Image 1: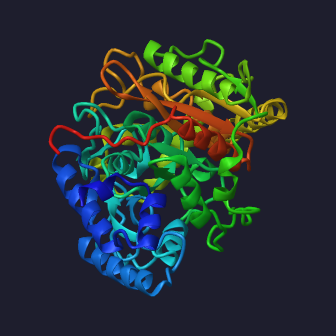
Image 2 (image 1 turned 180 degrees about the horizontal axis):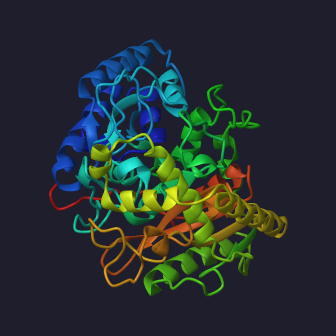
Amino acid sequence: MTELTELTAVRLLDGYREGEWSPVEATRGALERAEAIQPEVNAFVRLTAEDALERARESEERWRRGEPRGLLDGVPVTVKDILLLRGAPTLRGSRAVDPAGRWDEDAPSVARLREHGAVFIGKTTTPEYGWKGVTDSPLSGVTRNPHDPSRTAGGSSGGSAAAVALGAGPLSLGTDGGGSVRIPASFCGIFALKPTYGRVPLYPASAFGTLAHVGPMTRDAADAALLMDVIGHPDSRDWSALTAPAGPYTDGLAGGVRGLRVAYSPSLGGQVAVQPAVAGAVRRAVERLAELGAYVTETDPDLTDPVEAFHTLWFSGAARVTQHLGPKQRESLDPGLREICARGARYSALDYLAAVDVRMDLGRRMGRFHDAYDLLVTPTMPLTAFEAGVEVPKGSGHRRWTGWTPFTYPFNMTQQPAASVPVGVDGDGLPIGLQLVAARHRDDLVLRAAHALYEAGVASAGRATPSGS
């Protein structure tokens, strides 16, 4: 089964079609990998093996008849434990959530996967309510990096990133309110896309409002495009969902980057200190984009750091999501979460609206920027994975996780599509990510450019192998 865990979803489906292997074999392989990595990496809060194998057997029979249900029939997938999965508790990394709920509804993206025959193998770890850029919680402990378990997997979709990187299913659904699919993708060496806000419907609505996106976490860009073709459709439960895309994202992958206008910002105009290994790997990838025919200009967007406005929006959301908790429940919260909730509760409506004004102006400036450039390229992260179990790198001087994620959260504020592409490793073998950003609604350009990097061999879908596996 081991070799099946190394395949992308696209390759698995080709094999089902040709009869080379079956959904049951692929699902067993993914479950075995999940069980093997769990003691060392802690990517899962729950495995649903019995249900997964039942769904896989049903899929196998459909493939035998030549009647696959949809685009992902029989593909093993995982779901971050922020999103509802029918029949399984969604605890959001918190002891304050009662597991004895009804749990009889799927989130929109999960429902689309179910309709297309995907096989759910488990729920992945998250920090409490997805509040920070690393993955540890009072409920499930610390999630570790698949390349070096002494390091963090990033967050808040760290369990999903580790699962994909280690072969426990080629596809995962994550959420991103300030970088939460891109941060762990960069640290774990996988691909992740934060789509344009509203492209993937979300229900229940996030307390973090229109900062929160649902996005694919995958082995490569082609798998992400396939997953977007499934989940990127409206759902009546989300009033802010966009209409259906003009056509399949998979159809646009082969367009390449020739003629695209690419802005390369290595440090947001000197605002960000970037580790030399990260800067070098990203620059080499950008040079390859130029060789592939893109018109590359080294320039910076008009992007004054909006961190205080982001904090106002983010901390207010955290206060809202925990507002219903009693004193004993609050005592069980992650201390950092408890701290930002207290701060968020002190903001006034005028403070919140002032932050919205900052956000609107930032969106206007980025809109004008993309009149001149099709894509913006930056590092995803200014550093590689640091010690597991802490919110900020020791000795960094940062107070909150936003101090070391300056390239990610601004594009939640602007609602633009942004992806992390693995483009190398540092001297310790830790992955490095490149971020691709496009104008709102141009998810196709992000996926197309990312796919070009994979096709050119700049990006790698290589799987991690931690020492304990």
